Each structure stands twice: as structure tokens, then as C-alpha cells.
Image: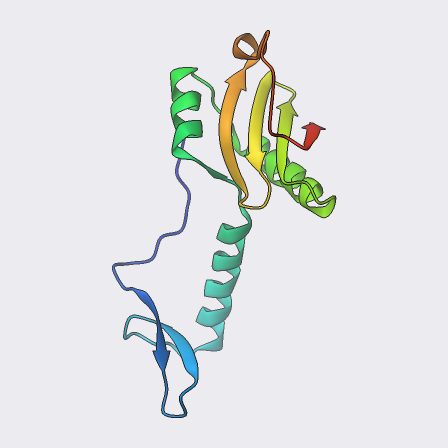
Amino acid sequence: MIDNRFSLSQQSLLPQINNTGAKTTSIGSNRTNSGNSNSQFSQIFERELSDVKFSQHAIQRLQSRNITIDQAGLTKLNGAVDKAAQKGAKESLVLMDNNLALVVSVKNRTVITAMDGDSMKNNVFTNIDSAIII
């Protein structure tokens, strides 16, 4: 699986207090006042926040069961989590068309665990409040 997450350099994201006492946020000491770069950063930052993440447990399950999810699958998964969030779901079972089941924390947009068709048999899914079939 390719990790396509955006990462910042070694600069920290710290709140700072300006002369008026109001908090502002800056990234390290390199401030850019260019509207274009701020816009690009905002778009990348927003996209990264909206993409579904995978917990360490889910990554281990995917690797141990030789499950891969392509970009089209990730797009479908993001759409499914968006729909679940619109309906007020908290923990969802997402059944994908390639015999893949994912338990997703909708609030955190994080895949908690993953199972293939063989692992799903005779299993009971608990602590979910919704199911999405894509």
C-alpha cells in the first residue's frame, strides 16, 4: 500500500500570541504571505483531513491477509464514509464488492479493522450502528 499522506517538514505547528494577545497559528518561522501558496496548502490540508485513514491494527490485518485496496477502492470508501457521516453513523461496517469488510470509525474517518471473504465467515460484527454495501 502506498502512503500518499501529506507530511510537513520538521517544523512544528504551534499557537502563538501576537501583540494584541490574540492567538495565531504559524508553521515554524517560515511564513508565506502569498495567497496562492496559502490556497494550495489549504486545499492539500483539507483533502488530507477528509481522506480515510487506516489504524495500525487495520494495516496489520491488511498485510497479514494480503488485502490491497486500489485508488478506486479508496475513492469508494471515502464516499461511503461521507454518506455514513451525513446519516449520523458513528461506527460502520463497509462491505466492498471485492469480498472485503472494513469496520470504520466515521467520526474519526479511520478504518479500525479489515477482513477478507474467508475471515468474514462465521463472524459476528459488534459495536456498529450501520452497514454500507459498495
